[in-house]
Image 1 (tube, one colour):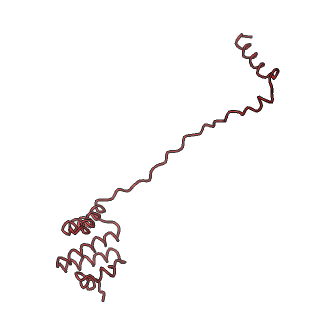
Image 2 (cartoon, helix red, strand yellow):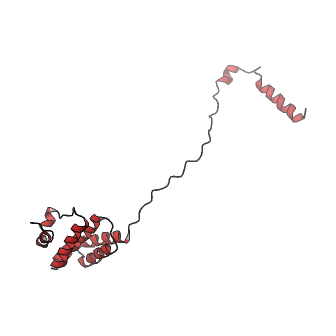
Amino acid sequence: MPVALVVVAAGLSACSSTKGYDTAQTAAVPAPPVVVASAPAPAVEEPAVKKPSAADMALADGLKAYQAGQYKMAETQLKTALQSGLSVPADVANANKHLAFIYCTTKRDTPCAAAFKAAKAADPSFALSKAEAGHPMWARTYKKALGLK
């Protein structure tokens, strides 16, 4: 038998012997924790964030400009949004509604009425709020354009 195996065998037999050791004391020593290797967690893909289209950005810019009282800029941006192909009917109606407001306040009644009609055509549920419908600058044109009383 080679020398290395004899040394290992002797060492193993010495470990199995309990002679001279207090077995109650060694039994109380806890075993080391078992480490279980696991596969790495699968990569979680972030949901794709849809970038706003040029039409959506133009609509947002147009509405911001309108709220800021920059009506010339608002008109340009709202027209750009419509020409760029807004895809949501409510957005098309909203762009046309704000264009109608701009047209009516600048005494352009024909394009005002056309914008109100376009808003209704894009979104059949389109209607001005009570406050908007009663505005003196466009109430009459709105009611006439949509055949309301």
